[in-house]
Length: 239
Image 1: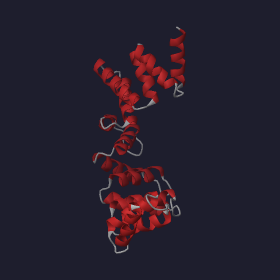
Image 2: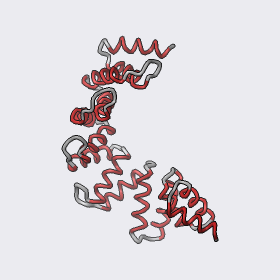
Image 3: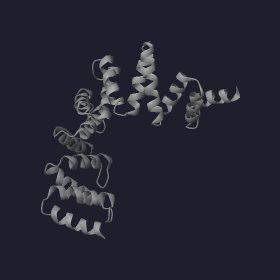
Image 4: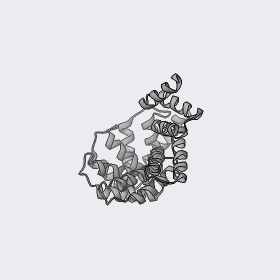
């Protein structure tokens, strides 16, 4: 068993303070890859690597602390490790840290600081943060409302295949009493999101095309329990 042998050598190197090996051995223990799952032991090695400055280890150990995976839940400590990784430039950690601050998840809520980390991650190309930052801007949630800036971030995330952003961007285009060009662009984004499984977008796209293609998208959404689509599809069948 080569994986079992690999685990022995990773452990040897990890126990000699080799940081990447701590991460690799921790991953094997966490996932039970080639060896028996031992999340408590995995957490021990992730913490060692994190405390020696390994960004991904900080992120994973923070998530284990937040979820109580292999160790006791400790949100304050999770926040600390997410922030450590975030301040080292890890955009997943920026987002996770931002989410904890935004929701007051076991820690004090701080939407202003959350926004700063969402924006940092968003500007580094992290789609979930683009969406979250855009939602804050759009709703004036914890920051000054700026719908035009929000629209830019929704589009940026949509163009990176973030489904919720496709839907939100398309909805903004439709609701702005925009030009025919805006409506055509909205239709394209609804279709993209629909084809990636977004149920509300299936309905919105079908409402915009109303032909044989609409029939197909109403059916898809109806089969996924979208009530308005069930009604529309039934009506089309009846008529």
